[in-house]
Image (cartoon, rainbow, N blue to C red; front, side):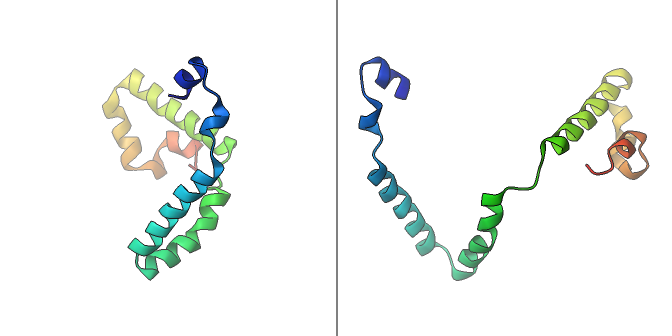
Length: 103
């Protein structure tokens, strides 16, 4: 939509209306407050800093997870999907999962 607007000669400044965004987000927050019980609002406020801060996942953790998935898919390709059953049923004794203990 924005691409066609610009292609037809429209100016992006005409679309960007900060006060309109304040009104929309204010209405959304107000509707959320009115439609939820106090306990839900308290839980939301307690978890909000975690949402803003992030989950603590790093690039290294993602790379380790991708490496584990690669090992599992390689085993499935070579030995068949049923070969993964023993690894998935008992990951603590699986040699594949032992390489990636913190996943």
